[in-house]
Image (cartoon, rainbow, N blue to C red; front, side):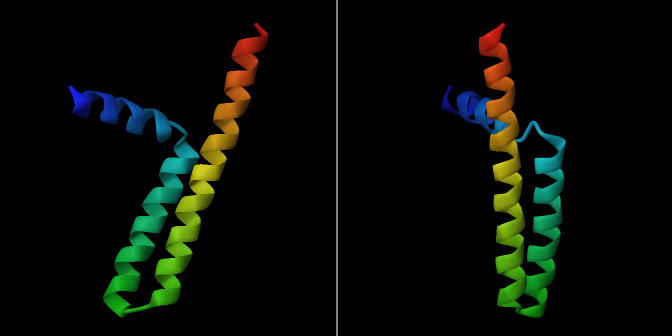
Length: 70
């Protein structure tokens, strides 16, 4: 089923606890920014989420390179 593939990919993409924490913080900031109608806050939340994805990508590449060497 397509949903199973998507859920597996999504869970693997958010395995890093730092990435998950950054996304939770970003969601909280987005909710507060929407409540206060602050566009700057929304942009900051998007940047925090992007930093979380960059950290995830960096750690994933590091783990993959270690597995290939063995």
